Every structure is written in C-alpha cells, then in structure tokens.
Amino acid sequence: MLPRLKLIAIRPYRSRGRFLHPHGARSRRRSSTDCDDVASFIDDRRRGVETRDGTRDDGPRRRAATTTMSTVPARARAVASRASSPRVARRASSRPRARVAAARATAVDADATGPWNTAPLALTDDIYAYLLRNTREDAVLRALREETSELRGARMQVAPEQGALLALAVELLDARRVVEIGTYTGYSSIAMALAMREGGRLYACDRSEEALAVARRYWTLAGVDERIVEKFGDAKESARGLLEEFGENSFDLGFIDADKRAYREYYETLLRLVRPGGLIIVDNVLWYGKVADETVMDKQTEAIREFNEFVTNDARVTYSMVPVGDGLSFCRKR
Image 1 (cartoon, rainbow, N blue to C red):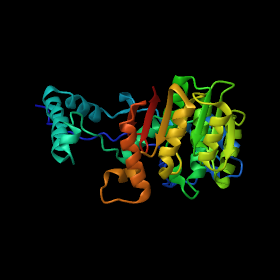
Image 2: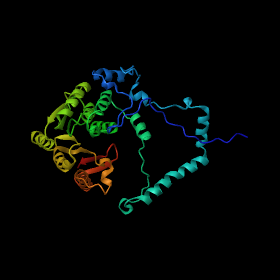
Image 3: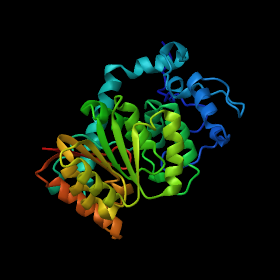
Image 4: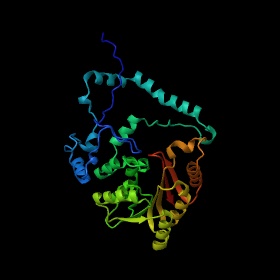
C-alpha cells in the first residue's frame, strides 16, 4: 500500500531581486540607475547583460518566464497530480462560494451593492509581484520608475500596469492627439507616446519644473520627445488654451492625474475637448482606499468622492471604474 501523500504548497517562482512597488517602496538591491549614464543602464536591461553593479539582470520579460513541470521535483508533481483528483477538486471548489458568502455577509451596504457573486481578490504582495512580472514595461520606463522611487512624492507616478493600460487605450483609439493633465516625471506620457503612430502629439501639462526636468530627459531617452508638447504652468489654463487653439471635439484621449480638488473642472474642460467616442481616463479614484473610509474627511478625499458620484450618474459618458493601480475611471464620451 502506498504511503499517504501530504498536500504541500508549491511556492511560485521569484526573481532574485526585490520587485519595486510603484508607489514609493525602495528596492533592497541598489539600482543601476544610480550610475550617471542612464542610457547605458537601459541598453544593459534590453540586452540582458551584466550591469555595472556586478549583478546579472535578464530584463523583465525573461524574469517573467514561468517554471515548467519538468523543473518541478517528482514529489511535488505527485502532490500536484493528487490535488487534481475529484475529491480534492470538490473540496477546493467550495472555497470560492464560502468567500462569496462571507463577502455578502460583511458588505457595508448589501442593499446598495447587491449580491457579490464573484469574491473580490485580495491583492497580496505575492500576487502583485506576479502581476508586475507579467506586465510589459519598456526598459526606459523601468529606469524612470527606479529613479523616481528616490524622489519626493514618488507614489504620484502611475503604476506599470496602469501605464500598460493607458498604452492599450491609445492603440485601441488610434489616438493622434492626447492631453495629459499632470505629468510628474513622465511615466504615463512616455507609455502613451510610445503607443502613438508617427505624427501623433501628446500635450503634457504640469507646473513642477523639477519633475518636468526628469521627464524631459526620459522623453529623449525613449525617443518620443518630438511627439510630446510640454505645457508648463497651471493645468487648468493650459487645458483652456488647448480648447481655444484646437476647438471642441479635437482630441482623442484625455488623462487626468493632477490636483484632486480640481478634478471636476478638468473633467468638464476635457469633455468639451475630447471628440465623441474618445476617452477621458481619471487616476486615483480609489485614493488609497480613503474614499471608502467614512472616518476620512479631508478635502481631497471628499473631492474625489463627490467626483466619483457625479461621474457615475453623468449621462454624457459611458463609464467604468476599474481597480487598477489606485483606481482608474474610463469615461467614453457619447
């Protein structure tokens, strides 16, 4: 009689270095961007060669490779095989239903939300690391993310998965003219500009000279500096200036990631600027979870709550809020 096998957990593949969380957490390993020559670092990452700090980095795509069953020890394969048996499968299949039931029971306002037929996913560090390993990120963007992590206000930078989604939106719309309200160090502007066809223009509005100085360097490194038109100063005035220069319905996409208390004003201006069928995408609509905490009553949080409620009921757009990064709202102008 065969001995009874004990079910064990097979730990997922991890990269050797600590992954870098996009909202300000530091990498444990010193970054190659500490070197003065950022372009050399970018070339190293693209080729997957030994970096200047003596470590070998095969780049995000190679690190994302998954472990095949042939590399898993025989005992682990046996355990995995047993885990697929009908008895174990029946036991596992009951867990999601239990989580859904718990979610319904603990919902703050079950009458308002309705039943939670799909349990929400708790985004643990391991799951987020897996997401990052499976997110396409240009080497220039990775270098920018690492440099920005050392700056004040690093969490203002969009997350890599947000950048990838913005780039996808640009491609889906075949956007030729884009306006960005709030550029910071340039991650989102580069992600979108890289997705634009030749001849496209992105108007980057920001009032921080320090942040724009970083953005300009990376626009050049990414080869998109000719596609990006910098608008330095108050973003509200810059947006109104674009409306006067190009007229209504003249832009394909607008991205808002600036002063939260001015979201409504930015939104109304972009609603005139963006063409029917175009998109307005708004960042930070979940505001680090503060919008759902009734004890938080600061002006920025209240402004985002009011904005979210307004857009939810705005018949001028088709609307969806998605929990990507710190929350993105997609508003398609009707």
